[in-house]
Amino acid sequence: MKSILLIGLGRFGRHIAMHLNELNHQVMAVDHVEERVDAVLPYVTNAQIGDSTNAAFLETLGIRNYDVCIVAIGNDFQSSLETTSLLKELGAKLVVSRAARDVQAKFLLRNGADEVVYPEKQLAKWTAIRYTADHILDYIELDGEHAIFEIPVPEDWAGRTIGQIDIRKKYSINIMGIKKSGRLELAVSPDMALESKNTMLVLGRNKDIQKCFHIHI
Image (tube, rainbow, N blue to C red; front, side, top):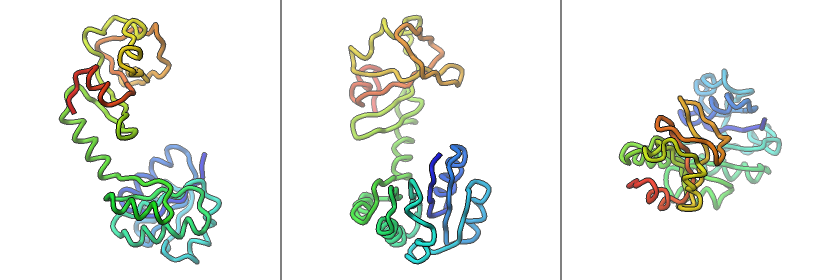
């Protein structure tokens, strides 16, 4: 369990609050709009109405006590930038800020953000790949070269074991898990047999995965 400060409770921030609640983390939620604060009360430990660009207000929150500070402000970049900078000045351990464009990310990183997330950009890429590339059921980008893909078990692999296929040696690709009837099995072993109705989570370089599974993205 971690202690999280979540600033900005628009749609993105609200969804973060809901997922953090599912993961049983302690969340302090902050926004300057009362209605937004009221909307997340069922999902957070505490919530306050306040201006995150006000240093005196942030100081009352005890910034150093949080494991992670998330700045999810989406429609006011100046406020996001000021909030990010103030959090770092007040001793925040880890600041994660939202950006919509690369230029915003550069300013945020220069002014205190430890990490930057691009929800719109990341979702746009996921949607483009997920719904235009054949045989891809899900996709998680790890960096510019590596990703995790969920793909169906190829027909000619059905009935064979992971060890027999030896995908790691041939393509430098790791099978991270097998999904059976919607349930994910992560304890994979060389003697596990594959079935045509199953899907696999595979990890590797994009170009290796594309070559192995004849995927065009």
